[in-house]
Length: 199
Image: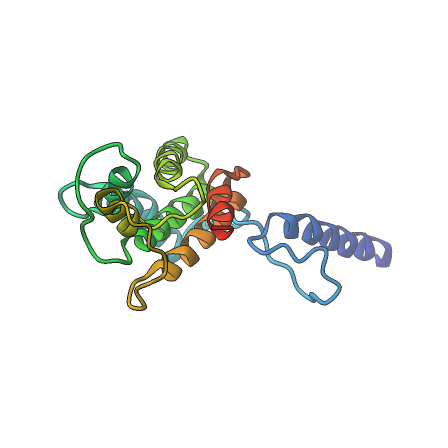
């Protein structure tokens, strides 16, 4: 019995080490970490209250959130990226933290994708990331409010308005890039965040 128990414990430890590689934060190389997380898509609710809540999230909440934030009549968050990318004409619309709102929406879609592997979600993300990449300036800077204004005035301003949300938006870009990378294994959004970090 002791031998079987030791084998079981060894299997759990090995599994935890492998899962740490897929966790949002990979602590497998840290000599200080005592615990490690599980992969984003490794836990699934199968029945009961939380399974029902997850179904609402999957079938209603996230699709509604995505439709809202990509709408050109309800919310202009994603439309601002299209204008900044030069894919359509227009002006910046909405609050200055709109970029961050869209990054958070992308993060929600990536988290859901980690559990479902739904190709429709992957398509949404890929289309959005392509537009975000086109909106990013050659020097890595990305903040649609300023980029759209710069197209009109020719003046490049960065971090000059203390009440603006450039750093806030950038933080959400980094988080969305990390979650997207862990959920999909793709680095295209993370690469945008890294490029922005050097601007």
